[in-house]
Length: 160
Image 1 (cartoon, rainbow, N blue to C red):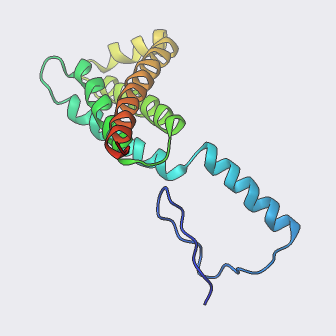
Image 2 (cartoon, rainbow, N blue to C red):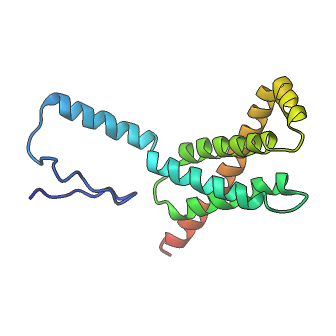
Image 3 (cartoon, helix red, strand yellow):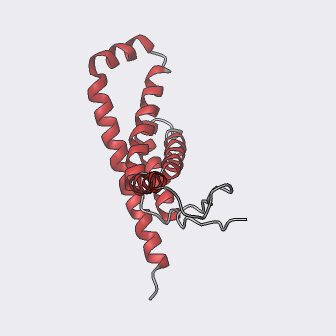
């Protein structure tokens, strides 16, 4: 039986069939490249942030009359929770997930509205500008919430 290594950030374990012995140069380069890519972008952190952002947008959008504005507050609260939970810094993942989730939520709201022909015409005329604006607002709300969540985590875990 081979020893299993642990990844501190997410508790991942090495594959049971992986050998602990020496490897070829190509294998070592591939593992090095994967490690560098995972340092820049962690898919599990992205998926966690995407699910949290989607839930925050949904719950924030349930507020009557002002749901289109409070959905971004819900996004900030959700990414605050992600920042308070994750030990690893994942700003890129949170920004990307927040922008994509907010864009998806707003487009879904447009395309399921009662005034579909008007919404489609509006998207045809202003779709790119709307996508950039909504993505930027979502990314900003997400990164602000995540920053304060990380700050809370840092304050709670720092020794006095």
